[in-house]
Image (cartoon, rainbow, N blue to C red; front, top):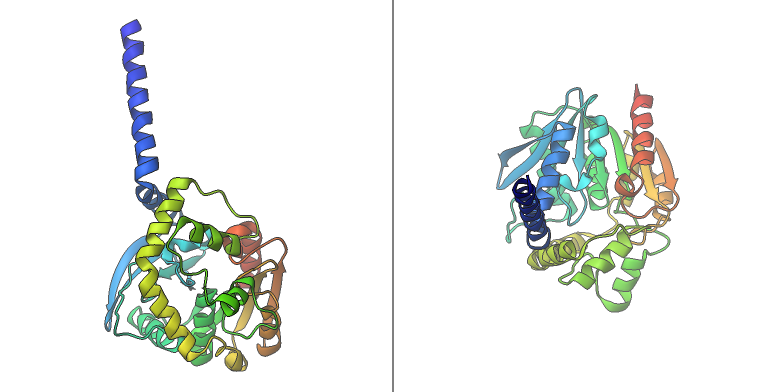
Length: 312
């Protein structure tokens, strides 16, 4: 009896020790497992598709009208978290990695400005034989989605933009003001301190991130630094505010959701969308930063669900 208890205790301690090893030394493994769980819960599976010179990797699941999600700078297809899950029973979901991000191709010789990305996105849409769909974009992805809706209006049933870039906000966000003053941009980082600075700009209430994960993300940021710097140069060469002059060309009903406390893209930019779009609903969420679908997920989900229901 005693020997059995000792043996059981030894096994438990061994498993606990292994767990600590995984926690401290393999945070990437834990994150990958979490991604797989979230995908499974939302009924999403991973697919690949070669389109021109880029290999697209995307998640797909659900049935019904299509919702196409376009992520922001430095993010990837799984960066939407559990937000898409709420729509998987009523809609077909497609969440791709944009060219240059996630598992999609990275070509040093290619341009990754918004106009080029919009063309690539359309080729991806054509390869999937999508005729009409609801388009969702966040931050840089909102810039791309809005531009796409102005360039291919017949394909976009509706447009949802979360803290979108692409307009000249009357007030600069803290990150861009710092960029003007020092030349630094928090979207690019190589250290744990840099990652922490970015978190403080992304969230109104910064979520706790354990030290091993901070180290992991710092290493990830360092490995992406040079290429992401190139992407930012491509974006700036074309112009950071080119969407503003095209808003009147968007006929689709549009939802704009913005965190009132966004320190990257100031909430004053929402007025540019309210003034420029023909058929738009603007919602400002208090005590919310740059990613409302994460920080205010329940509220954002309800807002988008109501918007989609109103289309019918």
